[in-house]
Length: 551
Image 1: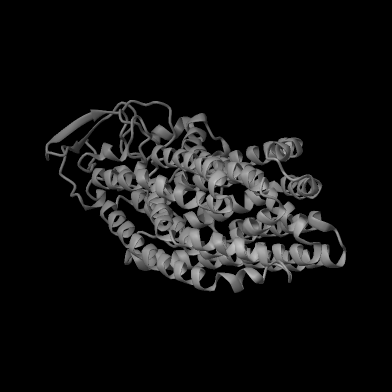
Image 2: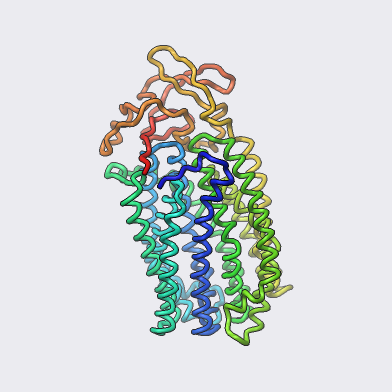
């Protein structure tokens, strides 16, 4: 079912969208918790620490790929909000191609660098072999993870966050069962734990694909849609690559932390690994709210409802503040018993260090909530420069904490890296959101159409509509008023015929008129640049959007 986020009270629709994401994040964290508990209690602390020692390299490479696939879904959400069915299909096709390429690169290249990479991180020798095994199995099955994340993202892009949740729950239950089977019954070690995760992710990816083909007509890609040009791929990469780099920059900081952590021994690594599992579970709502804000912003930008974007982000900040306070109190007061459930008896040193992590990080969850909301809002607008720079600042803060504070404060210095990174990133993101908010024009669809002379097409533009753009960004077709005509182009029609399309408001070489910010009628000439359904600053022309099918 398609669920547009362009109507209804903003905080309510975001909560409705975020709740399945929250449940999904919690379930996902729970099966990671199940992995940790089974590995830690059945295979021992060294095995648990070996799994934790791979966090850096997995986050660096897989985190980049996941961030990139999330970015690929933003143009889909914008096209859906604009009611542009052809744009939805082509963005899906372009994202699929790029996801497949990224998966192949990781499957072939990553296993070759795992052992030397772990050596650079000063991984304790007693952990190396098990860490290599765990990471290698994960990378060989990375395509399952990539496509599950991408297919889930494009389903969520049209407003459906419930269906991916159902498939995720199935996968998580399967993962828990397989971990018990492979580790406790078949005694396959940490490789068995990784294999269980890969099989579960493959199952969820296949379920997503089957549902998409069977039930979501809006995402059905035809033969003509696969003829993706450089412009379409470039638009996907323009958003996807910076989002991937943001994750990689954060991961590099995590690697710096891992190096210092490894120097403190296996006990510190086990404590950090356990605490991060609990921490991930605690911040699941903040992560879910951030993703909801990104989709909400992208859809409403496509629809031209800019005032609604401002209201929604403000309400999201209030929600993040309230939830963050609750989480902080919970972790500070109940951290010890939570940590004890992860490790066997007699590991009091691990429990104490893990609880220290939870207290230091939990105290600043309010800052993390602001970071998630503002960064996601900027990404939903297609603005990726500041979030990327914020990631660089996060990197600097994490490395500083890992290198400097760890020498002075030891484990306390290392666990201070995350809060310092959140503060640094927020110092960029909050002002950037304030500026972006002020630059948003008035609602596109609130403008009236004006009469034109015979033979001219009625088109209205928002005041200062170019404020939606940075430099020479591609202008979404939604920045113009919706076409009065529907798009009846056959699915197989070639790109060369698109300029003759009956749904286009302006054919090649024809003048068209619009109302500028001062209320004066202006005329412009279309400059055909060969793009498919897109325009630049010099080519602000609305191609009639093909109506989106609804089921």
